[in-house]
Amino acid sequence: MEKQALTDNQLESMSFRGGVDSMVDRATLAIGLNPDTAKVIQACNAVLQLKFPVKLNNSVEVFTGWWAVHSAHRLPAKGGLRFSALVNQDEIEALAALMTYKCAIADIPFGGAKGGLMINPANYSEDELREITRRFAMELARKDFIHPSVSVPAPDMGTSSREMAWIADTYKLLFPEDLNQNACVTGKPVERGGITGRTEATGKGVQYALQEFFRHPDAVESARLMDGLPDKRVVFQGLGNVGYHSAKVLSEQDKVKVIAIIERDGVVINEEGLNVHDVRQYFVETGGLKGFPAGDYDENSTEALEMECDILIPAAMESQIHAGNASRIQARMIVEAANGPVTYEADEILTGRGITILPDIYVNAGGVTVSYFEWTRNLSHMRFGRLQRRYDELRGQNLITAMEALTEKEVPDELDREISRGASELDLVRSGLDDTMRTAFQDLREVMKTYPHIRDYRTAAYAIAITKIAKSYYDLGMVEPPRP
Image 1: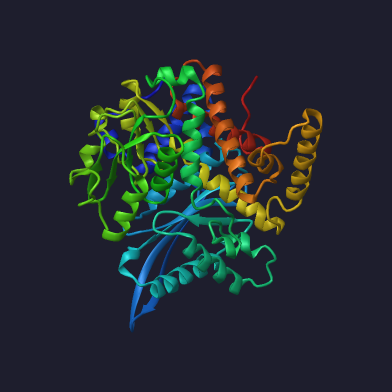
Image 2: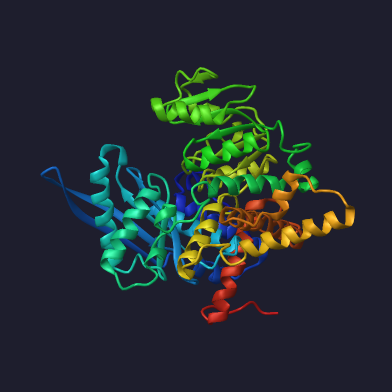
C-alpha cells in the first residue's frame, strides 16, 4: 500500500484531530495493519455537547461543554477535563484519541476520553466556579458520562484537585449508595480520596522518560547528545503544573540547565541556568515574567522556541511547533510534555531534519499512570503499603542484625535508617511510575528493532498503541484479524 502524499493546502488546513489521525495512518502503513481496522481504532465512539444555564449574580449565563469518549475497548474511559475559553469539539476529540493511545502505550487498562468547558476561569470567583463546575458535573453524571466504571475525569488545563473535589462531591450527592463513588474522578486532594504524587505525576513522568532515554548510549548518540543529562541546555515552554514540576526536578535532581522559560507574556533567559522555583514564585506573584531579576526578558516568546539548545520541552498548548516554524527549530531533541505541541506537518519536517522527538503519547503518560493508581486505590478502599510496610521494616532490621553479626561492625545510622525503612505510598507510586516509563521506552525501542524502517519514536509509539487496541478488537470479533 503506497503512502498518499498530502498537498500543502491539506497540511495547512489540517485540524488537530486530523493531525492525530494522520499519525495513526502513518503507523498503520509502517506495520502493515489493515486500513479498515485503523478506521475502527480512529473513530470517536461518542461526543456529548452540553449547553446549560447557571445563575450568577442575579443574571443567567449559558455555558457550553463537551465530553468525548474516543474508545471504550476498555473501561472506564479516562481523560482530563479542561476549562478554557478556546476549547472546541475538534480539540476535545483529538485529545480523547491521544488518551486512548497513551493508555495503550503505558499498559493502563483504560479507554480514552476528554472533557472541556468553554470558560475562562480567571473571569469568575471561586464561588462562581464551584457552582458552574457542580452544574456541569451534574449534567454529565445524569447522562452517565461520569461514573467510576464508565467515564472518569481528571485535572487538565484550567482545572486542579479543587475542581475534582467539587465533581466528586456532586457525584456523591447524586449517587450516595455507590460504594465506589470516590473513583468517579482522579486527581482529587489527598484528604478527599486522592493519592500522594498525583499533582506532580506528569512532570515526574517527563523526568523518568528522559532518564530512561539517557540510559541507552545508541539513542543518545543518534540524538547528538553526548554524555548524560547534567549540564544539558534546556528550554521550557509553559510554567503550569507539568512545565513547573518537570523543570524543577530536572534542574534540581538531574542538574540540567534551564536556560529559558517561555510563558504567555514573553520569555526569560539565563545561559547560566534559571532557578525554576524562583521563576514560578515571581510568575504567580506578578502574573508574568517581565521584570524577573535573575534573567533577561524578551516579550517575543514565539521566537524563543527557535533558540539554540540541547533539549526543547513544550509543556503548554497544542500546535506550538508547526509548518511555519519547524524549519527554524534549533534544538537537537524535542520532548513533548504537552499534548500535541508538534503538528503532523511539523513532525514530518523535524524528523526529516534528524531532530529526535519523544512523543506526547509516551512522555506525558505520567498523569494517567498515577490516576490509574488512584483509581485502583479508591476501588480497593486501602492505601498502598498498608499491608507490607512494617513487614518490610522488620525484614530490613533483621538484615542489619545479620550484617552486624557477620562483620562484627555496627552499621552507620544513616544506612540503618535507609535499609530498615518500609516503602511509603509515595515511594510505591513513584516506583510504579518509573517502571511504567522505563518499560514503555524499552517497548518503543523493541518496535524499532522489529520494524527497521521505523526510525522515529512517534511512529513506534503509535505502532504499539494501535497494535494493542487492534488485538482487543480481534478478540471481540469486531474486525478480522490479519491472515498468517
